[in-house]
Image 1 (cartoon, rainbow, N blue to C red):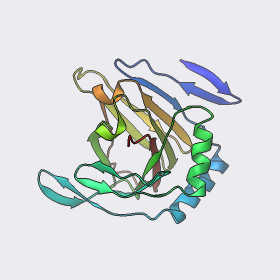
Image 2: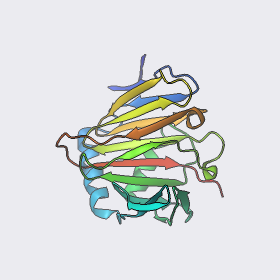
Image 3: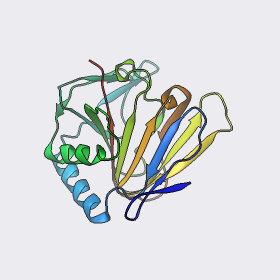
Image 4: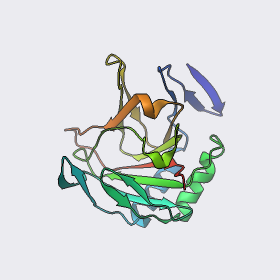
Length: 203
């Protein structure tokens, strides 16, 4: 079902069990999204950290950076990320997010997918630092990629959403308890994508 949010902006709210999710394909215009992508691509101190999988370390198949308003660290998959300050560009994005989602976001994890070989495996954003039912606001800039979803118990509940340049996806409710998501590799020749996931990290 599509509901009008403002002029030419539509919110899609799929009916998913055990989850709250909505998606806006054009939360930013193409001109705005192009500017944000270029600013972030050049300003962010991108890192290529190793990740531990079954006791072995590998370089993550993407670049990352963590930023927060209160110098909080974030731990996942054996990595402890130290945060950088929020840049003016990130603060501008956060300000617009709050016109739609009045949530106390404190941090943003950025992922840069350099090409179709970069990916993010199946996972839930369920680290204890995020609290019981975290709200995650995901911003996509650059090349379109499919966002895959699967229910942890009901194997028939599998979905995918093509995340557009300038789009916003928000996950809430009990979604992180019952669902996993991923950005899969693709053989297609595609350009870089920057994803920002805003969240509140509990002190």
